[in-house]
Length: 123
Image (cartoon, rainbow, N blue to C red; front, side):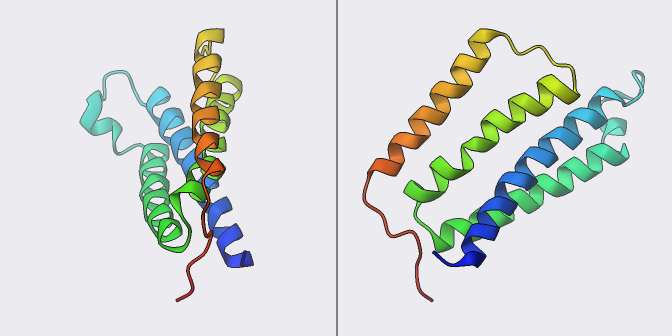
């Protein structure tokens, strides 16, 4: 696999996790009386939106280079990292049922890696 594809995969995971974190942080720190529309003007909310747009575009590019059976299991680690970031840095409650659900989701995504795939297309 080319190093560029590996770096793109890392960028996809990082953009997703940091985008969700920034959005969560911004919404938790928005003034209570701001309402949903004014909350969109909070700097961390804008950063989160920008990162999640970047995540979408990067993921589309990654899916153009590699099969879904490669992308899905590798990027599923983002679900665990999102839960960890929420629990540790946003002091969100993540009960055992949600951890179990998150791990089941990751395990299901990992099952797709059992199918044969060509991880990269040559352009």
